[in-house]
Image (cartoon, rainbow, N blue to C red; front, side, top):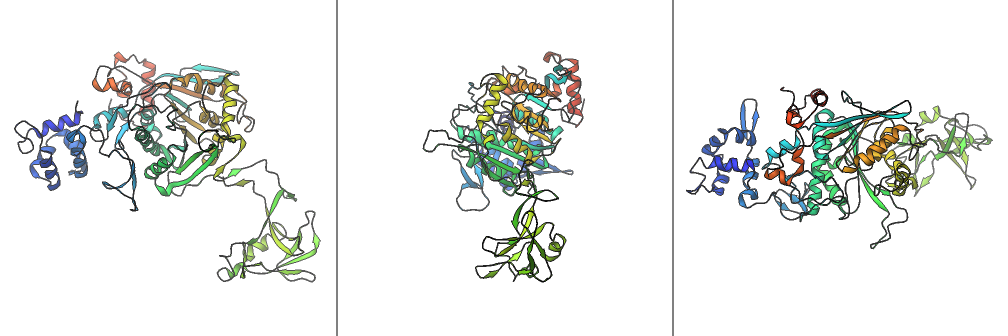
Length: 600
């Protein structure tokens, strides 16, 4: 069955004998030649038709400009030259223009269905779907329908009143509310886009890894390509949701890490890459396969190239020394890098004078920048015959003399200048190897909350807390659209961040929502003691409203996600939306002018 736009264009071309034969079959080569030459008859035919004008022309002030590339792509799709949803070949690799290549600089990853939209409509772990792929050009009508903001229903607020969790019906949802939404995550992201675009500081997701045994179960013969399409669709809208200084972190394993890195380079830009960190999630290793696997990956990107991660603050750090100011460790003032030397940094090469007879309680020695009787002159040491230099200039050294820098006697009887290092902060290392990060911690916590293991491989709250600490400050907005057991929202709540969690699996109410009720009640697992969590706060749970309008249509039989109710149709009595829900949806969506309601 041809897609709407294909049928429409076929019928339009049949109006001209130039582009069809006597049996009304389209001369594809004539059409392509007309596009290339910008044939007058062809252009007049297109621009006379409202749908073709909207699809293939761009309005610049009062002038309509033909998009030749879009037209060529449309007419060279296999829908015309035989029934494939995609213009990409049955191969995954790097391409430049139309050829797979090995050595060009400006390359992108290509795969079958890359130019399509895949909803991913699974709602149970044991469900396997034959998914519909909507081509971005051929299926524009279906995609526009899919991405219309969808109505929210079954809306509940959970809050703590008199030390007990209470449920109520909210009259509005404001930006400061914490949200947990049940529904297809791609559709939910597009529904939230206009209200939250540019406002999310951190997105963390732990998507299905495409291992064959996880929740990514689709019955197409391009399983690998399906996963890449699934991720590309979601990453593109995720980028729009990130704030200018936003960070996205994706946890994955070896099954898709290499391709995901290239895909993220394409979506976010290779210059916005921060790290492909290793996180140890099983210190003993999973003892099967050729090598016992102990780790997964954290792919970290920023919205803009200049964005940086926060330092890690170790408030419990123990120092080796202490003075009247506080604790400290020692680091040599000499710059050990011989690339910095007296030839290119002469201002950093000057003598100190050390008094070997005047020691403080830490056995550190008095120093001066002027020669004194009994003081020993000291220049930076030479290394490989090159005169090294200090890290500080003379003026800064003078300001910190005998306060932050002092002398120290070495084991060989020589002397060195040392700086007191007082910082409790440090950069996160690229290998995340803390015992508290392993998955076992997450499993133990889930068992504590629910009495048994109700979720496979939950992440440790300590790991998520580190990701949030690196990327956000208090009251920032955190998003997880593969919410799973709810770890991200639980940690964000305990750390004083706002959050949006999205999950389409049916277990969301039994696991994530119940977990969050325990969190606001003050449960003491995970990071609770570390952040002195005592309970409190609130969150709103809502669902994307499902309907059966399309169940008897060709597309509806294939695709349950067409069952979601567009917010523009919420007042239709057949859908059974209450007056209160209609009012709440209108307020939620129209405050930012989301399309669908503003013309009412």
